[in-house]
Image 1 (spheres, rainbow, N blue to C red):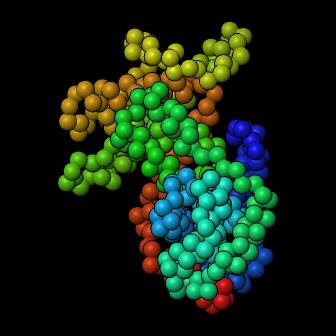
Image 2 (cartoon, helix red, strand yellow):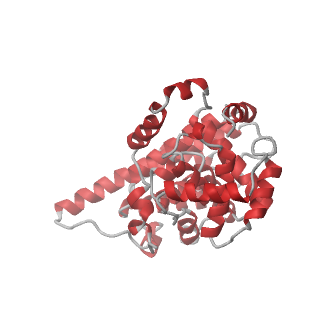
Image 3 (spheres, rainbow, N blue to C red):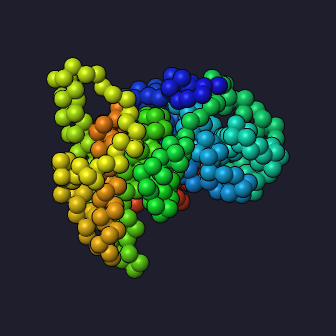
Length: 352
């Protein structure tokens, strides 16, 4: 068992580039193109949303915490990079993933309880599910994942750093929610957990709930996401300047700085470049008090400065932000009934 992400099987075997991930999925479809044409599936993002919702529904019935459900979602993603979805019953796989994840996260559920709740939740999809099928599917799932069952989640980074950056309870809750949402994308297979957590934190700092009764929620979200991109672009610019200074002085890159060294940012504010105008507008508009936007801007400034002085892959954070933007836009077109019908169609036709 790896004590940290960098030595883990997740880092060595289950982190891909976008091209690698697309090639793996295309290879699975090319094995039987007739099957693919006969049973079209929802858009990949919509499919991920549907799986996420179903796993969460089963987890709530079982009283399972968020982290085991997140692990189950990642198990499902890993499995379907190795096996074509139309060859399986996704409901049986999801139930098995929850059962296995609960064991790995040290909150085991009895196999009979999992099978019973799954049968009750999806009566038309897996009528004949029993403990034997769940057990058989468990061996199949473990085999396809090459017994790589340890999962490192972004939640740990968030809980470690939220106090250091002074996130309010609302901001921390929003960051936690964004991490939950990222499991409906391919990001868990593309980037390390700490990149996801830091991206969620910067989004939580620039996003804010629309006022009660406001109709501008989507516009506020769009403005906040644009502001997040501006923050990361500013951090990149600062990092480039810092890197150039280090190179000219013959010094090698330093390790990630401690947050205590960033606490003097207020006294050095005059020496630092100003925030991008998009960030300024995202914080100054619509605030009820003057102190709130000032506190938020200080947090954003400190966060951007910390990123610039660290070895964090800011380009990866930018890509995560863009992927989340695309996901939230796609989510608006999601149709649960349509996704369920397309999945159930090949399950019934192939008697899976």
